[in-house]
Image (cartoon, rainbow, N blue to C red; front, top):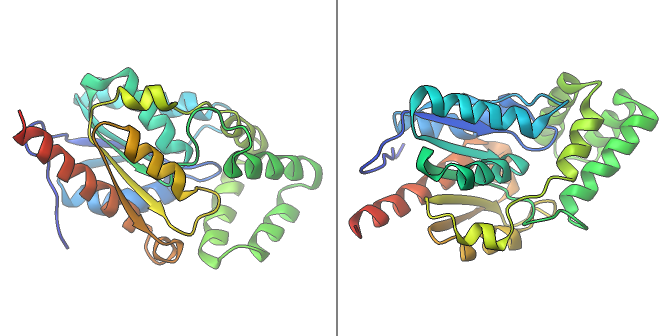
Length: 245
């Protein structure tokens, strides 16, 4: 397996954040193999479903306080929160690993936000077991297994967590344009909930970003592909940036 390290400033720790309704288990499997190969300790965060974004930001603050500059990363809303934290703390951020970004700026009319709000309403109306069964019947087996586990772990606060995520304002274009740390982006070409167009927009507007494309089947077979793709892009950017100084 190819291993990656950053030239120059080297992080010892990475904090990785799950997507909406997901958990630390998936985030860990998505990012740990690649980051461990780079000699980086991984902290995968389980969201507090009563305050998802706050719990994510607390975890990044604590890691940076303890370990110095860190790598931050995440999936979907986790990627957006990691990017927003990096904007607030560029001197504490070595790189951002952004997997499956869902929207830029406000989430109005986006597929991911709409899906989260719909699911939250169904959960409130019909309960966890019924909605989980419907989800599993209409999802790929790997995704059904992931969400069945993570949804149950966040119940009964899961609807609130989904609603919080659906109203989260991600960094907008002006925000993206002022973040100069390396950002490695991984996006699926066939993911309707996390459109490839969003990832391409991020890669175009961010001053120091690169995009790797993959498929949902690849993610289902091995979530670690998300970490490898985003890390590889970020390492290449970091090397380019160091050599230009």
